Image (cartoon, rainbow, N blue to C red; front, side, top):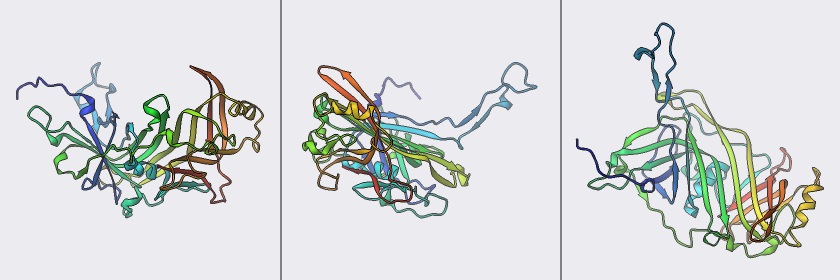
Amino acid sequence: MAISSVAFSPKEFRVAVQAQTALGTALTDGMQELNVDSITHGTLGGVNNYELKSGGGRILQDEHYFHQNSDFISEITISGIYSTEFAMLIENITGATSEAFTVASNYEPSANIKTGATLTAGNSELLTLAVLPPKAGATTPSSTDGIVYKDCVVTAFSWNGDMGTNGGLVTFSATLKTYSPVALEQDADSFTIAAYELSAAQTITMSDWQTPANRVICGQADVMPTSFTMNLENDAVFLGRGASGVCEVIGRGAEFSATADISVKYDDESADLLNLFQSATSAASTGNTIMSNASTPATGASWGFQFPQSVFTSVALSEGDIMGIDVSVKMVGYGNGTSTTCLTIAD
């Protein structure tokens, strides 16, 4: 086999995702390609032990080397321009099954992700993610060099926007984890993949937030955001060991967290945020945070996010081309015994 003179760009790799219907069974017959600009690839090496053993002398001996391509967590991070086609990522981390995606104060994660349980694909409780090699050609790798991560859950998701960059076009970042063995040398030509379409109707921008009364931070309305990041975190735990290295149960970590970091123009409205933060108490600090063009983000009416009750975690003056204020807030609930909505997201 002759050497190759071709080098490839990381941008030539593609990513596609599909919801699963059972733990341990990857699905690639109805995948959706995602518009990503960066892929942080998952761990592929497995469990390795290179420690020098007693009786082996001063050199690691061949019989003491240990390698196992299972029983480890592989983490993949992708980012790019957000499109409404990616709603399954938000569904997965929130557990909501339809837009608008909501989380209640008494949120409990899905109890269905276990051996033998049948999942509803439309609920996106588990995902198969495929990393596709550069498109086949005379000098490209074979289409059988695809990488498939099955049994993935989204553990972190963020929306990001900046009015000074592409008119506030919203980008995303998502981190997925799996405990199941990674499948290499998969034939990408056998997958059924719908190509992404980056149309104006499928993207979202900060310029849609045109109603000042619906731009609110901890109860302070009429602020003018210049940039924002909305973060969701919901870690996963993998329990048991079933067939072929697949775990028996996938649960969620101790906390579902929703936070937002928002930069706003300093003016007579936003200046009040400084005092609100300084004088906050447990009761007085909670207030509505919303970035939307409707009083509540809703399907077909607007896009945005809302923490009906939130607390400040940081407020600070920020110097730039103009004076600004950087604010960080965190969603809080209404009590574990209530089903009151504490997070709403619509795209």
